Image (cartoon, rainbow, N blue to C red; front, side):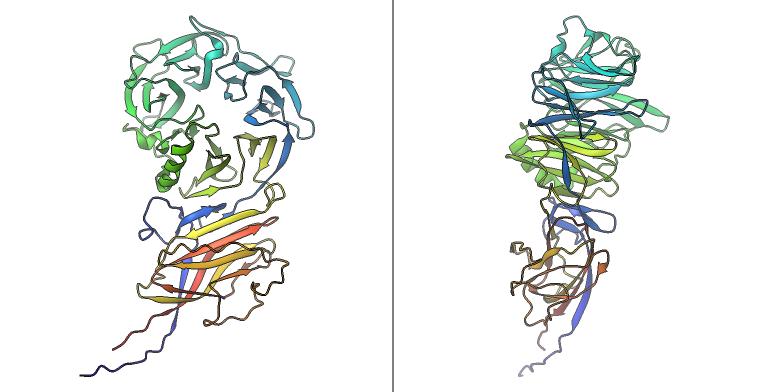
Length: 520
């Protein structure tokens, strides 16, 4: 019996693809990712309903030398001060127009700091600990911290924090912690707490943190000691001098910490920057009273983090940083001769990456974010350019079958975006896990005939190019079908922008395609 060929009339189908609010995913295979995730997500931040291009930075202060420490003193009067350590110098950078050099006799500029009882304390493992205090006259001054202790070499103190109304210090290259003899003391005698007999894997003490837990009976603060070999020694109680009050809750295995700035404290939880990722202790340690962290594990970007820690764990620059104004936590990461930032939405747990931000360190002043770089300080999250340079955004969305598992020919795309000013976009689709890369070419002000502009070209499914570059009108959400050409079972949208002086938001993309026809 001869089979009869039947022509089926192809009809176009529509599918609305959400923008990648699920953020960067470097954990799941390409075939298993949710379509709301992203394979690449650089300089776009995943919000609850949209993704937004990050803001840029502007010059704040020129020091002429690298800045490795930024710290704010929060005064009871509200007259806060902002300080920067660069090379062997200490600067007051409260005023952008008139920064003042306060000292130039330090050994290095990699200080760890804490504010306790209206004083700043700073240690670096090489110089005598420093403190900033408001004197009776109302004037603030930096001076040597006045601490003594049996066997203590003050210049060997390399990290500092506060827990249970006491200052705690870490002695460099040892298992010794030093703490205030009495609660609330800001000077005087320090007592030694040696953990060499408790830590099972050896190494040295790196950091100390106060960990607040809500077990249903009120607030219970724990003190956590982190060693270089990845052990967390957890103690309850407030007085290390009392055997009845000070008790070891457990010794737990965690990832090996990276650097002395490996602790992020946020809403009672402690996040550890380790070779295994960014780990909230509330999720990493098996304590019954552990609360639920507001910061997710970095498991979803584990591949990226492990790649970076393998290459750069010994480099200076790793630093976690909470930026409440932006709604995210930021993890500064040194790579080769530059830096990148791994950024997580504090509300949704979605991740992205910031690039082209040369941050040696981060600091807050008046709730604004600043970073130190090779010759000064930048104000971040300001303007829509990176010091007059364009901000380049790059998203590769996870593959989607567009609601139908059959073979399809993608014809038209309708990306819904919003922007203040015109901008240029490269948009195309990769089919069936292809890794095609089309370079970005800025089209604004260019009359080349091989580029197309928003609402200027006429499209057909037969002649449309595989990618298009177009500009949008400011301040409105645009809805305009534009042409593309790709055939396959699944598609990944690639969304690249390059702009300055502009805010861009992406809400989603309508897709029109033809389903493949068959034979009877």
